[in-house]
Amino acid sequence: MTDLPPPTPESTPPPASPAPPAPPAPPAPPVAPPAPPAGGMPPPAPPILPPAGAPSPNNAMAVAALVLGILTFVCLGPIAGVLAIIFGFLGMKKANQLGGTGKGMALAGLILGAVGTIISIILFVVFVVLAGTATVAIKGATGAADPGTYSYKITSCGTDTFNDPEMTITVTNTSNSAKQFTFNYEFRSASGSLIDSGTSFPTASIPANDAMDVQISSYTSTTSLSPKCVITGVNNWFN
Image 1 (tube, one colour):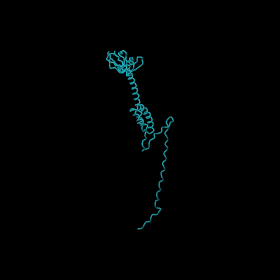
Image 2: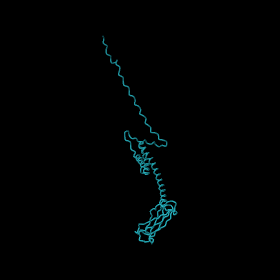
Image 3: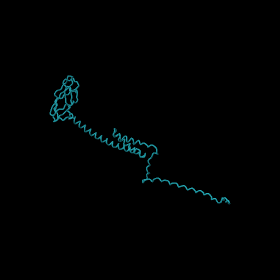
Image 4: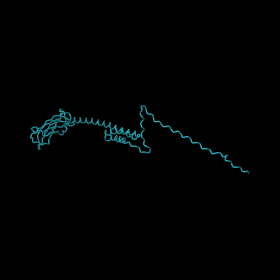
């Protein structure tokens, strides 16, 4: 068998040349800023958001508004109510800067403060009206008695064993219903100088068209043997 000669170098195919690299992608065009709205004013700045994983910022204004709004109904009334409204507005403004943090608390405090203040004002007005009505009623019940409902007569005037002046008066209820009275009195010396004055205790209930003896005494001793006894006024006692 005849051996074949080895292949010559000219018969070996040359190695393939590498492909040229792809051209780089063109850079993205820059993002144009948003067009300003009509009127030429720039758009508002976006809210500042905390970085991922960072603790949420605290809105102290919103917390204060909520606390003051609650205190409006508890003890402080309109004082806390007005403060709650102020802090509520400040808290909502702060919440817009913090991406909405605390906005709900600020709004709740503002509402509580406003409602509590209105209720407090209404209650104050009602209290003033009722107090005025009660004052008028008390004055009418304890003021000067109608002269057509009574008559009186001083039946005795002198001093007791301790030289304290005293008098006895007979009071007649001339009305058609039971009455109680108090008497403004004066004790004077024989020369006319004042010894004592005041208002007596209320009488017992005097039935209609009936009479009662009432004793009025002073605890101021006098050397006058013949004091003068004077009734200066007759008052109702819740009649």
